[in-house]
Length: 102
Image (cartoon, rainbow, N blue to C red; front, top):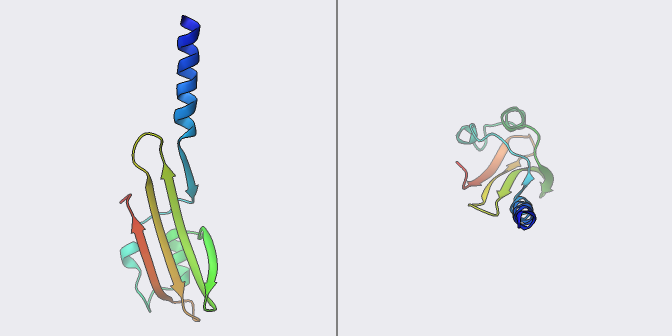
């Protein structure tokens, strides 16, 4: 009987741990409110948030994405995403932030 309890406990723990995970790269959200379109530079963004999780181009202009997702088999999932579009002078043209973590 003791063996079955140990086996069941190990199986349950394995299922719980397998149901948790994370994707992306966690980033600080302290300076979100400091971002200003037409004012904030790419250098400031790099200092505040670090290297972006993804980089790309939109209409020839740099676009950086900061993203972090964490899911749990028990409990609520968490996510936050910051997408920043820069102009040709590396100034923030537009940005979008969404989060259920803050």
